Length: 224
Picture (cartoon, rainbow, N blue to C red):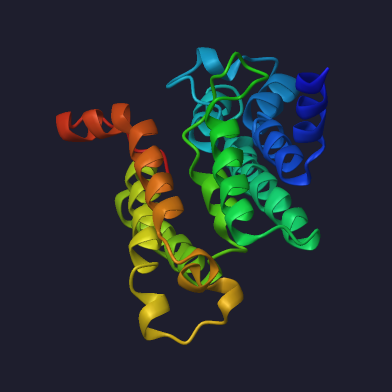
């Protein structure tokens, strides 16, 4: 009975509830849903098998080239928004910054290992951007700008995603120390550690290992 009481207490803890919600909400496979609903295709059987925007574009382009980019952009927006929403609600309810960062990490994990698709998913870039945008908006926006520029120049999604995310992470080691940011948007003031962004960076690198291998072998295709 004591064990049951402890379990119920743990599950009723608001932080724990948010951790569960973050993973489940982050796991909503918007790319898979859009392709399935509008084109009756399982995106996991196309291209890289990822549920992200790049594979959405790849899957739809074969059928409806005119709308492929629209659905790809919509997937980016939805995947980013789900990360942003859970962190926004955590802020509204007054959860601490440590909890907010863990919520962001869990939303990204949920996207990459969706519980609705047998714990398979996407690469996590859009969800990562959305999850951290309210926590480190300056570095996040800078990373988005870099992502856009690199994508425009190289036309390769994996390069722009990796460089954009990693540049935003690197900037967290620079900007808070040279720009007087408000405490609410400075990772140094929030938690005095860069561990969450380093973990995000390492995780994004891990999910892109197949892309990195193709880049080095010259087999990574242009999509953007």
